[in-house]
Amino acid sequence: EVQLVESGGGLLKPGGSLRLSCAASGFTFTNAWMSWVRQAPGKGLEWVGRIKSKIDGGTTDYAAPVKGRFTISRDDSKNTLYMQMNSLKTEDTAMYYCATDHGWFDPWGQGTLVTVSS
Amino acid sequence: DIVMTQSPDSLAVSLGERATINCKSSQSVLYSSNDKNYLAWYQQKPGQPPKLIIYWASTRESGVPDRFSGSGSGTDFTLTISSLQAEDVAVYYCQQYYTTPFTFGPGTKVDIK
Image 1 (cartoon, rainbow over the protein chains, first blue to last red):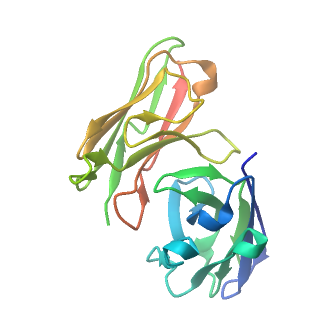
Image 2 (image 1 turned 90 degrees about the horizontal axis):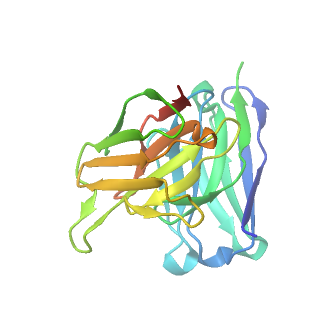
C-alpha cells in the first residue's frame, strides 16, 4: 500500500525554524518527484515546492512566498522527504501535506500542522 | 503565474441530480506538442487530505466512480458529477500543472439541497 506520513509540525513563534519529514512506503521513492502543498485553516490549497528525483537532477522549485526561507531535500536511503522551514511567519500557519508529484498530486499524506503565533 | 478561478463558489444539488463546476485558467494549459491539457481535479472532504479524481483534464483516476467526468480544453474546464450522491459532499479544486508554480483554484463547495 502506498503511504506517506508527515511529521514534525508544531507551535512556534515568528522567526523560528522547523523541519518537516515525510516518510514514504509502498512505492519506489527513489524515482519519485515529491511536492509539499499547504492549506491554511479554512482556506484553499497552495503549492509550496517540489524536488525531482536524483536521476532527473534532484533539483528544487519553490513558490515565491517561501523561496529563500524553505528548503526541500530528500534522503532516498531512508525513503524520506524533508522540508526545512526558516524565518517562519504567521502566514505560514497551515496544514502541510507531502504528495507524490506527477504534475498532479497523488497520493497525499494526512498532513502535519504548523502553527506560527506569538 | 497562472491564476485559476472556479465558479460557482458553492452549490447545492438534490440527490441524483447533476452538479457542474467550472474552472478557468488565466492562460492556456494545453501543451501543443502532445495535445494534453495539464489540468487536474481534486475532492476534499472535511478533515481529510485532497483526493485526486481527474488528471489530463478528463482522465478519471483509478477507483473514481464514473459519475465523475472532466471536460474542456485550453483555458476552460468543467467537472461534472452526473448523479450526486451523499458521499460526494466536499470541496472540489482544480489545479494546473502546465508550469510552476503549480496553482489551484479557490475551491467549490458542493452540498445536498
